[in-house]
Length: 82
Image 1 (cartoon, rainbow, N blue to C red):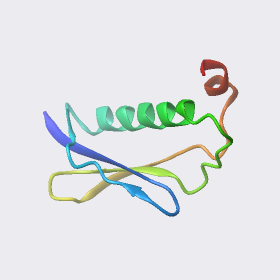
Image 2 (image 1 turned 135 degrees about the vertical axis):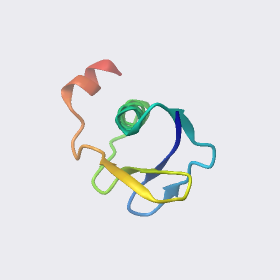
Image 3 (image 1 turned 90 degrees about the vertical axis):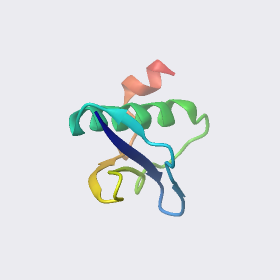
Protein backbone atom coordinates (compact mmCIF):
# COMPACT_ATOMS: atom_id res chain seq x y z
CA UNK A 1 0.00 0.00 0.00
CA UNK A 2 1.13 3.54 -0.79
CA UNK A 3 -0.10 6.89 0.44
CA UNK A 4 -1.40 9.28 -2.22
CA UNK A 5 -2.63 12.84 -1.84
CA UNK A 6 -5.44 14.16 -4.04
CA UNK A 7 -5.32 17.96 -4.31
CA UNK A 8 -8.36 19.53 -6.01
CA UNK A 9 -7.68 22.77 -7.85
CA UNK A 10 -9.60 25.31 -9.89
CA UNK A 11 -8.15 28.27 -11.76
CA UNK A 12 -8.24 30.36 -8.58
CA UNK A 13 -8.09 28.00 -5.59
CA UNK A 14 -6.42 24.80 -4.39
CA UNK A 15 -7.98 22.45 -1.85
CA UNK A 16 -4.93 20.73 -0.38
CA UNK A 17 -5.25 17.14 0.79
CA UNK A 18 -3.27 16.98 4.04
CA UNK A 19 -4.48 13.51 5.07
CA UNK A 20 -3.91 11.40 1.98
CA UNK A 21 -5.33 7.98 1.26
CA UNK A 22 -3.72 4.53 1.32
CA UNK A 23 -4.16 2.72 -1.99
CA UNK A 24 -2.58 -0.27 -3.71
CA UNK A 25 -1.08 1.55 -6.69
CA UNK A 26 -1.24 4.57 -8.97
CA UNK A 27 -4.08 3.06 -11.02
CA UNK A 28 -6.18 2.88 -7.83
CA UNK A 29 -5.25 6.51 -7.07
CA UNK A 30 -6.41 7.49 -10.57
CA UNK A 31 -9.74 5.71 -10.05
CA UNK A 32 -10.11 7.50 -6.73
CA UNK A 33 -9.45 10.87 -8.41
CA UNK A 34 -12.08 10.13 -11.07
CA UNK A 35 -14.54 9.27 -8.29
CA UNK A 36 -13.73 12.56 -6.50
CA UNK A 37 -14.34 14.47 -9.74
CA UNK A 38 -17.67 12.70 -10.26
CA UNK A 39 -18.72 13.52 -6.68
CA UNK A 40 -17.76 17.17 -7.04
CA UNK A 41 -19.68 17.52 -10.27
CA UNK A 42 -22.78 15.85 -8.80
CA UNK A 43 -22.75 17.89 -5.58
CA UNK A 44 -22.69 21.34 -7.22
CA UNK A 45 -26.24 22.50 -7.80
CA UNK A 46 -25.58 25.69 -9.75
CA UNK A 47 -24.09 25.85 -13.23
CA UNK A 48 -20.34 25.39 -12.94
CA UNK A 49 -17.72 25.73 -15.62
CA UNK A 50 -15.12 23.06 -14.93
CA UNK A 51 -12.46 24.28 -17.37
CA UNK A 52 -9.15 24.50 -15.51
CA UNK A 53 -10.24 22.25 -12.64
CA UNK A 54 -8.11 19.18 -11.90
CA UNK A 55 -7.03 16.68 -9.27
CA UNK A 56 -3.28 16.49 -8.75
CA UNK A 57 -2.12 13.17 -7.32
CA UNK A 58 1.12 13.43 -5.34
CA UNK A 59 3.24 11.11 -3.24
CA UNK A 60 4.62 11.53 0.31
CA UNK A 61 7.52 13.61 -1.02
CA UNK A 62 5.09 16.02 -2.73
CA UNK A 63 6.07 14.91 -6.24
CA UNK A 64 3.29 15.17 -8.81
CA UNK A 65 2.52 11.72 -10.19
CA UNK A 66 -0.60 12.37 -12.28
CA UNK A 67 -2.95 15.26 -13.01
CA UNK A 68 -6.54 14.24 -13.76
CA UNK A 69 -8.60 16.90 -15.53
CA UNK A 70 -12.27 17.57 -14.87
CA UNK A 71 -14.35 17.25 -18.05
CA UNK A 72 -15.12 20.69 -19.45
CA UNK A 73 -18.83 19.89 -19.88
CA UNK A 74 -20.93 17.81 -17.54
CA UNK A 75 -21.93 14.60 -19.28
CA UNK A 76 -25.54 13.49 -19.51
CA UNK A 77 -24.67 10.45 -17.36
CA UNK A 78 -23.54 12.64 -14.49
CA UNK A 79 -26.58 14.91 -14.83
CA UNK A 80 -28.94 11.93 -14.78
CA UNK A 81 -27.23 10.47 -11.69
CA UNK A 82 -27.79 13.65 -9.64
